[in-house]
Image (cartoon, rainbow, N blue to C red):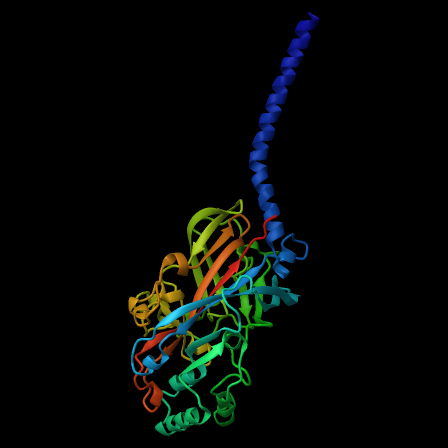
Length: 425
């Protein structure tokens, strides 16, 4: 009798434990995702108490800026009307350091900050030195010439005389360091004296001079502490809720984040929208595929083929550039009217006539498309490869002698690759 009672009690206990395990399992199935979500929400918001705050404040993983220059092989022939021929030089690699300063938390669930950047040359990662000489279009001279197009003939003749007197040429031979960080040019001093509003700078001119030891403007973004639905979204940039560079309200909108973090819990239907001060506009990347980066699951987002399409190809872009070939964006309106254009490297995803107008360009998706790999649960980028090209638009300008045989074309100056690498533990 006693053994039967003990057996019944043991069976009852096992049944109870089984039921308890089943109940706990059901609770865990419901509760664990909720707990995980709560922890993610708590630690990705911009708050000094969150685990990600210090990483947001000073990015701990290294960024590398790789710059390639298009060395002009036949400058004399170009002046006679022939196609330019270029060879790509580089990469010239720089370690990029970023840190946020002037961090101010506001009452409306936003935080304002300035992010400063500095660059340090990495000779061991580079294919060449900053002392290398590059033959490329004289940006100041050709830029000034293009800006003279609608000026009176008398002013064009004065400018041509100034070019001749100062010994300025359509092409220049300068070092990588000078092109990157600045060089003295007598034309700058002359123009600033007689045409003070033409050039927006004084002293040295360099393509990346304004980026080094400087910030990209005052960002104000939502922290997600009070309203998680707007986490990381830009509220204002330099006090503006929209810019005034473009020809439509849609194109002038400041959309998305500042380009460093996005809202967590992504799906393949998610898109990455961000405002880029360098491009003076908001951009949107689309989901391509899932993957793994150093053991971490990621979603890869890429630029759609319409990113730099003109208004004829993609009507929503009409406000950016309604006129030129598709695949390049005129950024002159936010670059002091200098005839500069942004595109994918080698005019990838652009009208084929752009690459065909310059010998030595070979666009292909493997080398020239951009992507971001993002951890979908947290919205934190794990790896990125942002590739862009800067070009100078040139053509014959009546009254500017050296340009008389120029064929209208986008003259590639350089392309850059900005890459973030996760440190392996």
